[in-house]
Amino acid sequence: MDLFESDSLPAYARNGRATDLKIPGKKKSPQRPEKQGRRAEMKTRTDLSANGSSRLRPARKEISVLLVDDHTVIREALRSLLDSDDGINVVGEAENGRQAVDLTLELKPQILLMDIGMPRLNGLEAARQIRHLVPATRILMLTAFSSDIHIRQVVESGADGYLLKDSSANVLTTAIREVADGRKYFSVAISRRMKTLFQCLPSDRGFGTKRPMLLTARESEVLQLIAEGGANKQIAAELNISIKTVEKHRQNLMEKLKIHDTASLTRYAIASGVIDGGLLASPVAN
Image (cartoon, rainbow, N blue to C red; front, side, top):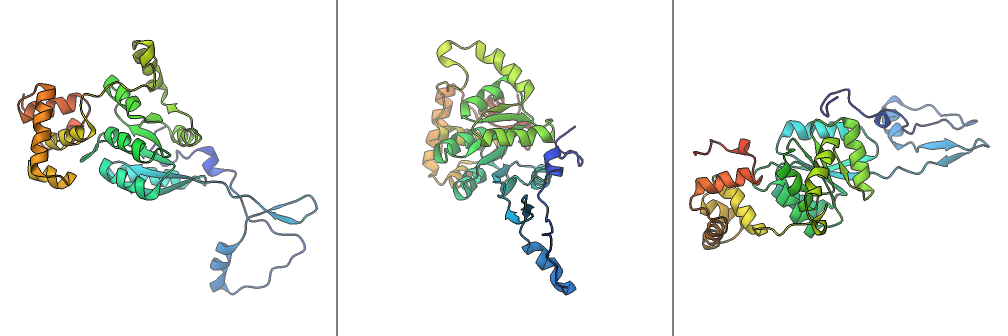
């Protein structure tokens, strides 16, 4: 069963919801039809104790979630699914990594449910920035990417979980709860691959450790925008820096990567997972 099937709601999203119970011995006074809807909204959820008296039922604590994906249809499907769960509250949506950083700073969600391949700022770099700026927010990646390089980069970004988009709805809601409780959660296929990948690393660089990064965070941002076809002036406006600073970053990128043209920078960005090649308007010449 796929995440985006209409009948894929988890069992606890369909059952076990609190209901309004009548208190014995108390008669309801007639209500005018126009006020019944408003009155129903104001009812307090109650349980019946052993002696028949009512007591308030503690409200279930909701997990606040920010959705981040560049495809509107996927965000809408995820919101519909998660809104059906009484224990999860979708507090906002973003369509790229830069919006994700801004909204996380504003909303402080418990969970950031985010894709990897997005324009302007990819999910990996957004995760690194959010981990630094809002460390209390837990990051759960939901993506179609499952290559070895993406697995390594997700772990090194500091993400707390990694799900593939073919996961079931039940797996998704379980992962959200596990990550919100402070645990890690990975798709079965990802977990199996991780065991092989990280067994190959020296003991002092095991799971969850960060390898030295060749590029700085700003250089990674500039690289993505270059690969997406941005001119120096556009990149400067996007990052709120001067054109001379963009030129300096471009020069540093070429020196570090030993690359001397924009087409090669773009190919490097695709190969290293900085951008999704499918996001490019036209193919990169060889």
